[in-house]
Amino acid sequence: MIATSALETERRDATAFGDAALADLTRHFRGALIRPGDTQYDAARAIWNGAIDRRPGLIARCTGSADVRAAVHFAREHDLLVSVRGGGHNVAGTAVCDGGLVIDLSPMKGLWVDPVGRTARAQPGLLWGEFDRETQAFALAAPGGIISHTGIAGLTLGGGLGWLMRRHGLAADNILSAHVVTADGDFLRASAEEHPDLFWGLRGGGGNFGIVTQFEFRLHPFDGKVIAGEITFPFARARDALNMYADYAAVAPDELYLDPALVIPPGGAEGIIYLEVCYSGAPKDLETALAPIRKLGTPASDGLRAVDYVDAQRANDTGDNRAIASYLKGGFVSRFTHELAGAIVDNIVGDPNRTTILFFQHCGGATSRVPENATAFAQRDSVANMMAVAAWRTGEEPRAHIEATRKYWAALEPYTRGFYVNDLAREVTSEQINANFRTNYPRLVEIKKKYDPTNLFRLNANVKP
Image (cartoon, rainbow, N blue to C red):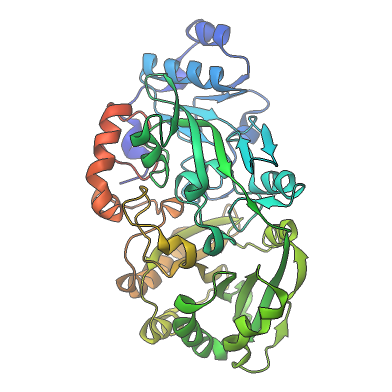
């Protein structure tokens, strides 16, 4: 089980340390060290998913690699449970832990763009909106996420799905190098030439092998002009829309990102299906790309418009219903069928006290033209990442919402193979994690043994040494 309660008994509790025990860390640490009772504590432990309410014993807010190394050494010396926070967006809440040490990278927001070499060096506290703002100033972009407040670090290490991946590959496919602090506190540069095994594992292996303190990304020329927005249909048209997606998703042009989403709001309102579009190709080819959608007939609303890419990234920042308290189950779909479309529609059930969502991230394109064993990310044959989500008001009893999502997912899971490690379900087993990496798993175990033999970095889709 991934739940931290099962792991905490194997590590000492950081709340037991007094000022004297922290004195040595304080001498070597430039950032803030936050403990229970400090005025900043509650804000520092809060993350994106309001369902997560964990109380770490110590939060080390790092200002650079030296702070990260000091925090890692302290955790090893005192046998502490460690979580690593970048943007704090992981729905399972792995950025924080109960009783242990949070190594918080959020203050590390340096970004250096080389417009001539078309590269960017970025620190792990950056959010994608911050990254895009700087790179777009030079008409350049790296494939990022679909929400601007997602952190670049966690998303990239898990593979990195986003609007531009069908054109330019995963975020992880665009890493040129990474600076890494390993479990023994060593500082390494990983690239195709230096520590290539570690470089391979970082690209899809999540946070298993160390803490990245700087990414070097390949950038692509991109003027930032996209056609984006939502085309909405009544819920009665959901089956038709999903059947269209089943027929079209795998053969759509790389420039088209298409994400169907079923939403049943709380309070008894009628559900809808909308098709979220982000088209980054030539305007003259737009209608050809949208032709299968247009064949569905007149929508209830059509919000497609020309927007800047950075604005498209922000569009879901407030409309994303997961950003309250939420629970998610997800998996990759390698073959989208009409049978799956029927299962999605026939089994979804709303509730007066929650928002129920089923949505996708459109894969394929450039992501599928990379061999399965070229990086740790193994889901290269996927046409979409499918996710079932329940969202409710923070503080409400979650049990009924979680059970309803599990029941819904039980009807859909047979159509999936593996899962996105950035959408880690809290009850995923070690066996499911191992199978998720497919033929890459044995190689990941060897890398884990080399760089983290004691499994210090375990609050993730954990590869056990």
